[in-house]
Image (cartoon, rainbow, N blue to C red; front, side, top):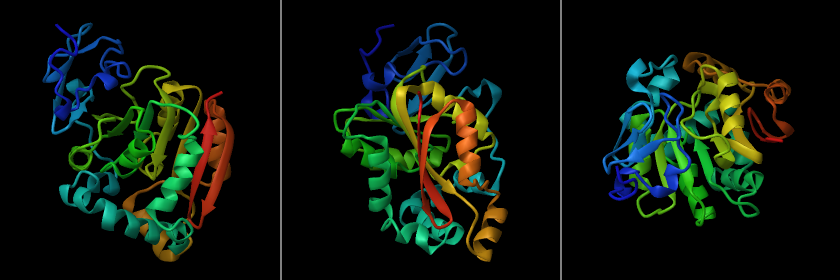
Length: 280
C-alpha cells in the first residue's frame, strides 16, 4: 500500500493527520491510506473517510449509544445546523446565567480567553479541539495558528458533517470521529487540547482526563470550560432534565491533580468557568 499516494484531502485523509493517529482497535501506529479509508497494517481494521472526516471509532463493538438527553440531541441534524447561532448561546444563558456570555461578549471574547490560555501565539501544535461540535473553535484555532495542524474530534456524525462544510478552505484542519474516552491518537501528539463546554456530557470524566493527559506533550496545556452550579432555578431544572453533570472548581482542581495535571487556574463566569492546567 502506497501511503499518501492517493490521499483525498476532501475526505479528511490529510498527511498532516497521519503522524498523529493510531488504530483504536489495536493501538498500533500502523494506519495507512488507500485513498478512501485508513487501514491498520497490524490488525487490518478499516476506518472509512467520507463527508470530510475520518471515522476512527472501533465499530466492532457497535455504535455507541447516547446515555443522556443532551447526548441524543447532539446527534440531531437540526441541532447541528442551529448549534452555533441559536442552540449554544441559548443553552449557556439558561444553564449558566446571563453573565456567562455577557462577561466575554459571546464567542469572540470566549475564544480570546481560550486562545491565550492555550498560548497559541507562543508555541506550536498540533492542537486538538476535543468534542468540537460544528467546529466553531476548530476554525478559530486554525485561523489563529495557520502553520499548525488543528484536529477537531467529535462523536456526532451530524456535528462533523456541519463542521466539514464550514471548514472548507482551511488547509490545516483535520476532522475525526472518535470517542473522548478512548482517543485515537498517539501519546504526546498535541501541544494543547481545547475542550469547550463538553465535560458535562461525558459518561466517565476520569477516562477523558486520563486520555487528554496521555495525548498531550510534556508541558502541553489543557484548556476547557464547563458548568458549575446553575445560578437560577430554571438553570438547575434545565440541567437536571438534560442530564448534565456540573463541576465545582475545587472538585475539578482536585480531580485533575489526581490524574497528574499541574498548575490549575480558572476564570469564573457566573454559572460556568474556564480552566487551564498543564501536563508536567
